[in-house]
Length: 208
Image 1: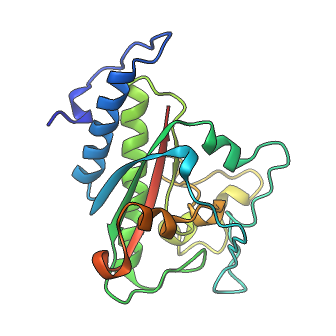
Image 2: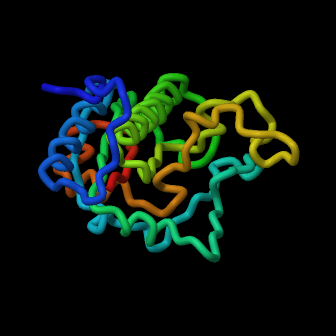
C-alpha cells in the first residue's frame, strides 16, 4: 500500500477538494499511523466525536501544575474548531496491562511514558504527512500532559515561563482529555473495548 512517505515534495493546493483523493489520502494517513507504531487506527467523522460534558483535567498531584488544564478560550472553542473538520485519524497505542491512566499528572511508569511519547510522535508524523499532501489545517491531540511525557525533570513548563519557549515545540500537543474529548467513548464506537484491546493511550488528528 502506498504510504505518506511516497510524497517527497509538497503537493500543490487545489481550489476545490477532490473527494476521491481525500478518501485515498485518509487511508494513507491511517496506514502511516499503523506504520509508526499504532496498535489500531480508524478514520472517523469529526462531527461525531464524543465529548466529556463534565471533563475534569485535575492532576493526580495537587502540586503538579498542568499547562493544559483548565483551558479557557473565550474567543475560540476547541469543540467548534474540531466540528469544522470533516474527518479525523483516531489511533491507539498499547500500554502495559493494568497500567493506570496518568490523566494530566506525573507518569511514574517508564513504559507508560514511552507509550504516551509514541502517541505524540505518531500525531506529529500524521500532521506532517497531511500538511505535505496539501491539508494545511490539520489539528492534532495526544495523550497525557506533554510536560509529564517530555519534561518530567522540569519543575515548571517552560512554555509558561516569561521569556522561555517550549522545549519540544514540534512534538508537544494538548491531550484529548484535557480538551474535553472522550477517547474511551470514541474507542468503543470504533469497536475497541478494555476486554478486546487491553490498556491503551489514544491520539487524534483532524484533517480537512
